[in-house]
Image 1 (cartoon, rainbow, N blue to C red):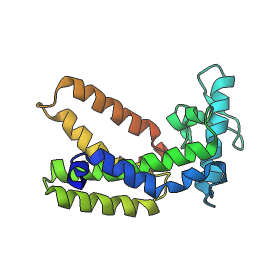
Image 2 (image 1 turned 90 degrees about the vertical axis):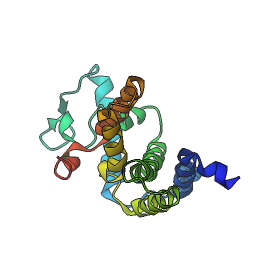
Image 3 (image 1 turned 180 degrees about the vertical axis):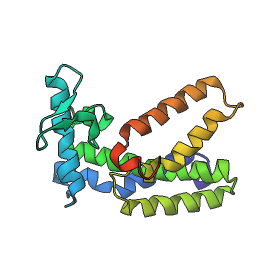
Length: 193
């Protein structure tokens, strides 16, 4: 039974990500970390979405900071998928989804990196990826590429390989675009130019 379960690493990392983010079961009563990520960045989700709706779709100016600034210069820009989701899902749900996706991306991306690029044994890939998933629980959630870089690297490598079918390349490009769209560009570009 367990050997069949381990043949599909996606399910393994989905399960471990759910366990690591189990407080989502508390719903609106979950603990909110006292850190500026939730207090400042996640509240900006709501205001960016409201800005996007009130401006008719193309936001160019963010009036909420002192003196205002360009809307795309913030970590959460109006076109961030989580900014769009905050218009339909409560902030605690967006925060839970964000944490779950970050942990899943870290574990599964590292598993793909270890098994496909470094060509380690399946057991070594699972151990390394699960250790990375557990270590990623202490990463700041605002630095998306700390979580997503292994997956980004593997998908980018797969897109450059000539053996990859074009239909897979399109889906890989979409995932790469989604990762870039979710990243906080002011925090990502200094570390991953």
